[in-house]
Length: 132
Image (cartoon, rainbow, N blue to C red):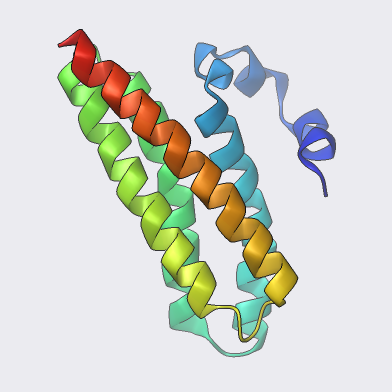
């Protein structure tokens, strides 16, 4: 499923939230949906711990972005964005480790998406630090 196809399925209540304007949030939420199916493939191959670690790290990215965005202080926002950054790097690592079960093509696409999210998070963190 493409991002555009996925976006049409997102409830309007989510899209009307101001945090929807953050590209890193949208991409990480999209990736968490894709990860749902990826982890099912890992579970089918009895790689339960790998599936758990991968899904937790991917899911943590958007969750920390939205929690950080909801904070009043720029210092707190930066802290949650840093946690999201750590989760994105962790997820990239778990996707690499999953390449033996997931296709190489799929793994490379997920890693590229995570790299884009990581770059966006770097900008968000720097922006919040400058505002302090």
